[in-house]
Image (cartoon, rainbow, N blue to C red):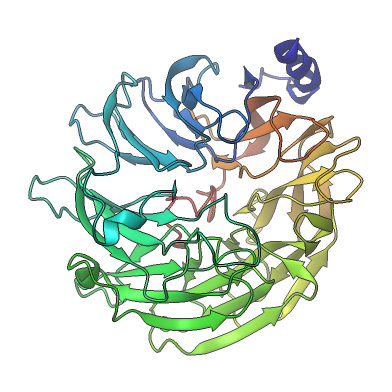
Length: 488
């Protein structure tokens, strides 16, 4: 029944173009939902990108299909991997088996982190807490977030993985009890072995996926990371990667520290000062958007979005005509779980001033993507919208659609509005099969009476009639390359 329910709801999404059939499909997972976002790689060798997404049942429930790979041609299941809890991370790809096919690295709740053979779906390794829990490693007991490839640290000639671990969902709001310090870790990509680990310097929890970047382009890369949570203050930091490899983050520089709210969503790196060095732009969970000079650490500007919270990352693109990257963010009105609406802003990257503002839908933790769909030199933004009663997490009559924000022509629906929801998954935009048309891959969940509960999910491939003019500037969660860096 659940599969048929989703199927009937989604059939109207999939239309035909008069002169040719669109390459559309959807795949359903009964009893499941997702807090992950789709990432794509060719796992079958047919030249068409395939889809990998994390999934799960309701929190603390085991699932046999918690990491899922779907054939990009038709949506059929290629393989699935089990997990003890929800897989909330988004996939990172590296070919560590050297077979010409990207392997998959992904994590989530209950300290779950795995390496998966991309071709076969077999486990390469699964992170396990060590028997010796002395030292900083004892803190790594909760959630893994998105991993970033880093240069080879183990001497095997293959890139390794930077990842954060932290957060305790069993802790009560507004208290530090049970909130152990988050840690940054470097794992050997071929084995999952811990190569380095260090606790964050302020002793706070962490939920933020770290960034890895060489700001000076001089072979001295840095790590950008954040601390704090929804009700616990924290900071945004930068540290030398070399110090992390020495198991020490005590020399990390605090760009800012905020009381009452931490940094949850991954920051983005984009050169808004136009000095050739990427700058650091981040949402504080308390609804403050901040930009820091990547060369000097100076606060360039900040924008306070009153009476809002934000656990969503930003989209980066060109939303006006000054040639400086701009930002698009989503902000939930009120305090979780009693959010009462949603506020969207396009913000000038040069000044921090609002370009456009909107008030569409209700809460959600998904992020927007940006791409120049019509080829006019100004990027459009694509983002989920949940329409329901906007009274906390209790849902009455939720309907969902993808909205396209065109800063010259207004907002229009990209997909039909249907009786489904999206809690926290960001779409992917690009050309899956090289036919010159935009493809959008996204996920929706079946409705329940509570927005955070899962009852069934679908992954949808929707091909657009629009010709692909250029590679999307920001075509997926954490950017087109998945590393938080804006590249024009």
